[in-house]
Image (cartoon, rainbow, N blue to C red; front, side, top):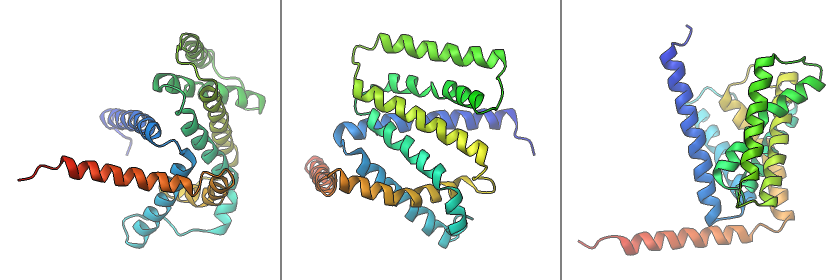
Length: 230
């Protein structure tokens, strides 16, 4: 059955709310805990375990891990996680409105990449819409008084990797036949070796875990102190 206009609008609204909430929550977390690579590693571990046990208990219909499928998704997963990692790093120095604006450059970069890869020239209406959005990003950046070179660099690199991810998915068809949960499952598993290597090589681990446990204990202590005594 074709989705009704009401269902489509509701889905779009839910996606927009979830997308905005994700940015605000990530920004709030990174303001208190700046070890973004450790956060991403813990997120991928949690996603892997949650999907695995949901499949075992029958809550999802995701299929078990398959080596052949993992090989097809290797580059896709690499670009996906690179995009997420640089996006989290950019949020340390870029304010939320500018972060959202910079990420809106992705359609422009996808159009450019598609044109040079032989996909063809987009329609004039699509081109004007995307160029107008990009021009708005430039104007907003010029008026950003809290300009942070590192944050902007990370955001633009994130846009690059997101573009490569989208182009690769479209051209390779590696995700054909897989549900969104299964794609997340493979992305989480394939990213773990790289993330574990990075947090160890950069020295973020194990100090990052010590800081995390200290913050958790401090939060728990604050909640206990604020608890009313009846």
